[in-house]
Figure 1 (cartoon, helix red, strand yellow):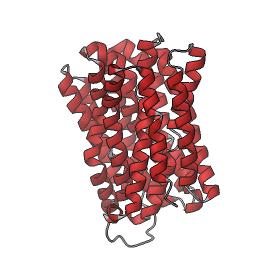
Figure 2 (cartoon, rainbow, N blue to C red):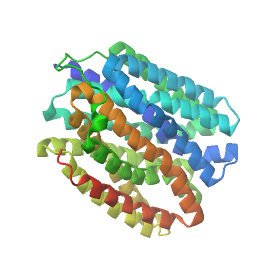
Figure 3 (cartoon, rainbow, N blue to C red):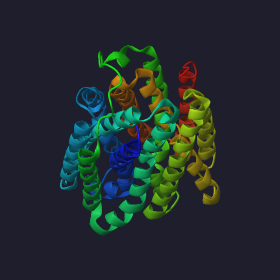
Figure 4 (cartoon, rainbow, N blue to C red):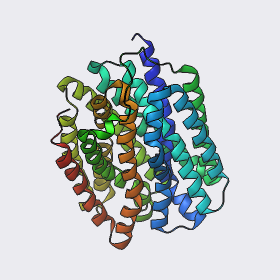
Amino acid sequence: MGRYRWTILALGTSAQASYSAVFLGLPVLAPALRVEYELSLPEVGLVLASASAGAVLTLLPWGLLADRVGERAVLAAGLSLAGAGLTGAAFTEDVLLLAVALTAAGAAGAAVQSASGRAVMSWFGAEQRGFALGIRQTAVPLGGAAAALVLPPVTAAGGVRAGLVLLAGGCILTAAAGAVGLREAPPEEELHDVADPLRDGRMWRLSFGSALLLSAQMTVVAFTVLFLHEDRGLSTGEAAGVLAVMQLVGGGLRIASGRWSDRLGARIRPLLRLAFALAVALAASAALTEAPLVLLVPALGAAGALSLSWNGLSYTAAAELAGRARSGAAIGFQQTALTVAAAATPPVFASVVDASSWRIGFGLAAFLPLAGAAVLRRLTV
């Protein structure tokens, strides 16, 4: 495919990063949102879930459309509309309208999941695909790390509105870059039934097991800033710094796990090992919620990094189970399951913590990766 495949990888990664900065940036805005809109902890959970809830409705349709018309049009349109939705969210003073605008932005921006993944899948062979999609999947923690570092000072200077406008600008900029730079890969096979992954039992098993792992991830990523700020006394900037380190280390683990899977010629085996490590790290974090920060922060950081490490393997497995011609539909289906989990977890976890404690919340979360591993262990991809 020549050197151009690396251009595709760079464009796909930057596009995904701009969208990831939205749903991973909202937890960074959580303290400011809670003050500005006078929200309870469960209400914060609902606002944090709004962007993910919107994506649930559109991920599969965007994936089907990407298989039909190509990645460039889908990516450019989706991110442009997401930027518009975030701009609307920035200029509303009503919490209900804020949630509606964030839901619309999430629904539009979800186009990037299938479009960028399908593009990278198409331009890289099987011997490099785990590595390439691992790099592409680092866009998620990298976008989150950028949001964690940049949003606190921006919000301190200009409030929630400034933070949302910044996120909107990132989506619009990468939409323009994708519109200019993306090209379709040379054709390899006929496109017949793009809905075929929906009838594959392996895809259902992969999606359900991955959703359980994603739920564990969201308990850490969505609530680290709020937990460390409100319960352990760190400033918002310090707590966001912990989250940023999690994201960066998690991104490195995604690349390493992708290379590891290429060498093994398997995606699920390394994923299972990472799931068990995550369960141990979450259990340790639960045990240390009231311990000195010098003990708690490393444990929580390890749990966060491990919670972000496995996504590229699941993403690659979905694309490879379906094949190139139907990879958009497969990724859209799998990402729908993950986004349902991402939308459902914050309000449920917040309610558990509100009714009990952070220790019990993180302790229960430690069982989620074990359940996910039990579902995934029979897959051979």
